[in-house]
Amino acid sequence: MKLHQLIKIKARSKKRRGRGIGSGKGKTAGRGSKGQKARGKIPLTFTGSLSLYKKLPLRRGFGNPKLTSKLKLVSLSQLNIFNPKTVIDLEQLIKAKIISQRQARMGVKILGNGEVKHPLVIKLSLSSSARQKIEDKGGKVEYA
Image (cartoon, rainbow, N blue to C red; front, top):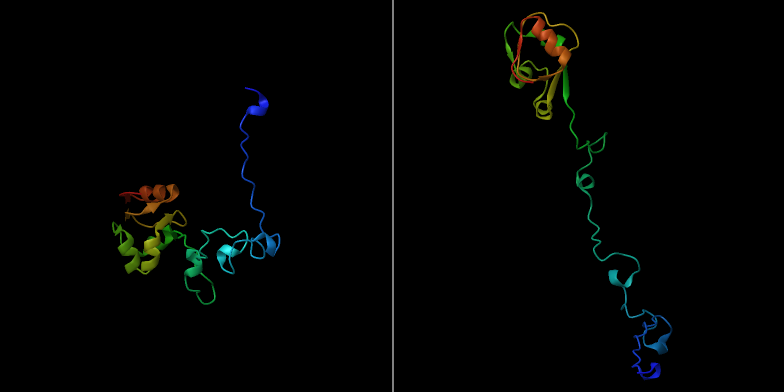
């Protein structure tokens, strides 16, 4: 076979859109009129949905609260109101009004600020300095 005998395969040419009324694809260039598909560079998956924090109602004065929660920090000196050998857990702190119910849900951590006057039994997470001060006074830490 010679070169001129090969079957010529012609690739289909690209449709030339938007080149006047006579071309048959003028004006709207085959996109119809109006609508999302008629506009340019807008992805068809775009729904315009809002993110969660924008859907939440605005709170007067402070805007939306952050969705992350922070631990409520309690110092050792605040625990001196309890009797010796008292088992201190979330319920005890709520009864003594050291923390609120809402703060209890976010979590509580006891810090080693101040001194503890008598031995206590703690069932909360606490810092290493707080643990040492409680154990020096003869108290116990059940779990931290």
